[in-house]
Length: 293
Image (cartoon, rainbow, N blue to C red; front, side, top):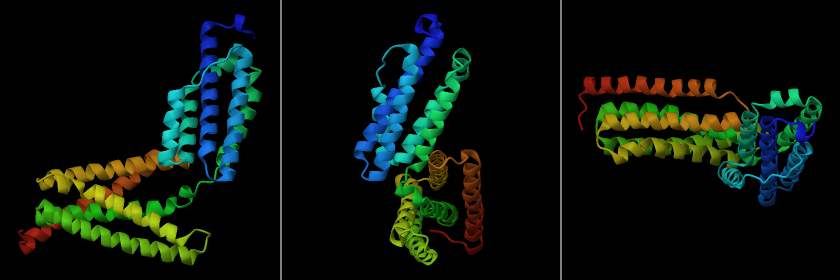
């Protein structure tokens, strides 16, 4: 099918997909230039070549060149810097998939494209799966730190809130509890990784666990340092917990192709359930023992 025989709507769809491919080409090349790992850099260049081949496939039908979306290139470059290569790449691929809502109508108009594009997409997916990123190797350690901190500290803060009803005291007690627990958890992760002997660095595993734990502690305690009403502080702590759970599970769902909703609901239910029980226990302890601060 030549450009002259195309409907304006079909031509616009092809140009949109062509622009997505050339944008991907420039993004992968940019990421390859800043990637220290030689194997990952080579893989990114191969993916860029695949994107360029896709671009040429669309160009064969549109008979024109299109410019990349430079804003999108900069955006995904920044995302890769902040959250890692795998997350940025898979997020971009998801975006492309979402944008291809008119894919079926294009194939109906140009059926000979289907086997060519299917083979190219399969090869590109295989290349993406070859990317070996260190941070994803230690995602289990991060999960351990976040999960333990969320469950333990949301529960502790809920209990302390009704037991003490003083935001400064609650913040201090929560901080001491959290930091002590983070060191304990990091040490446990070090010993566990060392004993497992699965090729992971015990020090890095402990570091990922400890840092994730401390970050969670600080974020959950923050409301008690900024406000005076202990109930408002507790409410914001629960909001912070849900935000952490949502952001982290979204990251995991994209980077490791896992379902988001089930993991989010499970993690949120456990954390908030423990917090509710601790909240009740704190109130009971305060009433039974007559604690007043």
